[in-house]
Image (cartoon, rainbow, N blue to C red):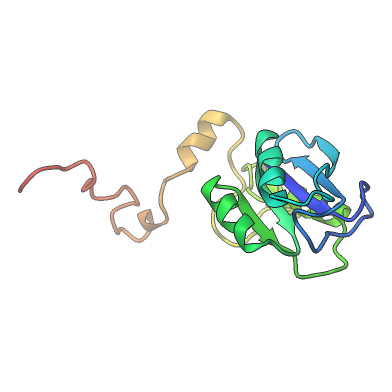
Length: 170
């Protein structure tokens, strides 16, 4: 997933710009590879259809999420039609560096059953949504995932009732 951040300048210490389409620079962060690209906004001084031009540019770069302080009404509908997520930042002092740190942290939240927990603080330090310890190989992980929490309560074992597979009249 690629995220574009509207910034006042093309550096990590820049704050998030209050204008999406007329910002000075876009910082594009690839959450999968960690790559970062600083893209000066070529349309910030244009007169017509700035929002559409910028949206087309970022969509062409593969951006699926945009972070800014504000979005115009026309741009909101355009981004919705392209299935690009809009994230509004309330804090006017939020820097690009801090947002990238938060994005990196969020992409590492899911435990990998390696005994480290979602924040690397050890097992049983998460939100209690699953097991973090005990599995070491991929085959063992797949056996542990999806067992269902109801199995201990004898409520069907979390396997479902198979109603989705049934079709036609009964």
